[in-house]
Image (tube, rainbow, N blue to C red; front, side, top):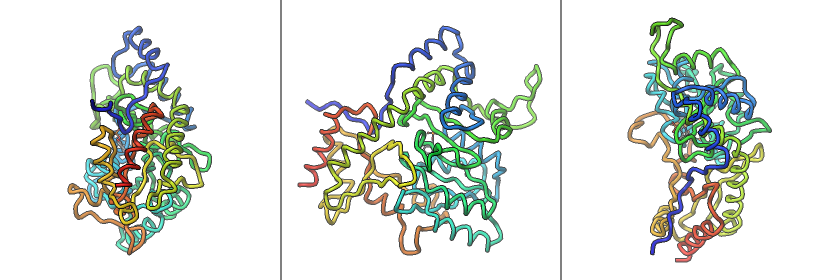
Length: 381
Ligand SMILES: Cc1ncc(COP(=O)(O)O)c(C=O)c1O
């Protein structure tokens, strides 16, 4: 008989979610918006230490609103990390602008300051700086914000921090997501905090959040009849899903600890095997270890990352390659891309050799042993 399936990062429901959802039902507040939404915004803002938070139905919506607020439009360029999920960059195109992709650096796998510097220098020479920079924090680890922000400040370009995967992580003691003009979280089903689907836009600029709130709620002018002077979106989170989010937030620190323990066990199992390298944790902060990710040197391991993924799949274990860099995606073909170094494209290397292992915070030790065992056997073969 087939072993039960082990998923990459399934939802992990704790003890408070049902209580808050029951409150939403008891109050008959099943509508979008409502007291659970307000409370979720307030509690998440308190957790990360920010003044303004706006609960939305996706992280992609949050990025879209931030770009619109920064007046990104046709003819503009937006710099964006290449090694990420497509949702980081789609909203650039929604706004009619053009993405320019920036490579990763090997220390954190996040945006390379040297690639960003070259992209800025060239943009300045061409007489057209980008309208915004989207810095992504990959797999739960903050990018090296200090040099990246210094460059963006030098050129006077605002930053959107895509912290969809890094809620609960820190950089120099400060919450990941709170470094740019705007920060973005995702509560998609596989994220460390899930509402089944959802997102949050945050900023210390409460007026900016107010404007984004207006657009996200169908741009209703203050009038008893429905009146609209601007184009809006239906982007808000429902009261029921916000109730799940509140419960999830209460258990967040525990899930981070669990994911870090999972990483630690993989590390103990694989770190000494020649040819296997686990995603490093940069010394400047704490990763939430959303996913444990490693790279396989096929010469030294005798197998490719893809072969390992296939063997795991045959054992009913879900593993995935590292994100396919966006500059390699068919939909973004022909887009400009700046490598870490002229002769080194880090994101392409990570994509070719990386794999994400099951890392759900509810993964049992016996299940993790199954994964480790299967990887070891594949290596031996
Ligand atoms: C880095 C990153 N950015 C953006 C998104 C988009 O978030 P959502 O799925 O909530 O729209 C995701 C995940 O889904 C992501 O991983």
